[in-house]
Amino acid sequence: MSTWKKYRNLQASLQEFLAAQAITDNVKDLEETSITIRVGRKDATFTLTTISVYFESETSKRFETGSNLRDDKQLMIIDIYAKNEADRLDLAKWVVDSINDGWQYYTYSNDSVVPDNPAKVIGKKVNVDFLTNGRVKLGDNIDQFDAHRHQITITARINGV
Image (cartoon, rainbow, N blue to C red):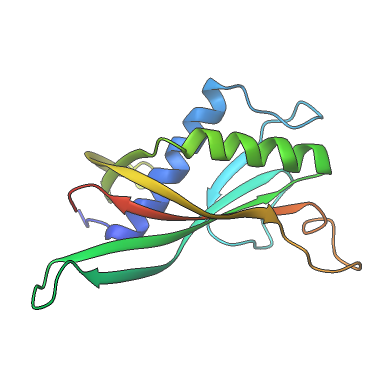
């Protein structure tokens, strides 16, 4: 088994949390279609409506001069690709409300027996600070996937890690 590193664990933990919450809250678009929640940036396999989560970067500040202990914070991006404005707005509010109290962090490991279902070990809770929450403005001549795009950026901090 190969243990994943922090950034992949963060992405997978957030994706798993939002996917479970979408089922609990029965989140669907206006056409009553279930939404897709995945890890990674937009690619050719995307369908509307999709929420994409991914790690972007990390800041690491020393707690005090001369110490090697650091306050690490990860910048996470949550992109919403909606079919229309109503879905964009409703999904953005749902995401913000869902992650406001944070989510559970897991450490994942590859499972050679069931490769599509990695083993996981529960860890600390992830705390969230919101940075931005708004429409992505790309101009007038854009494709259908970006016409109703929304982006939420957060800093994530794993308690005790």
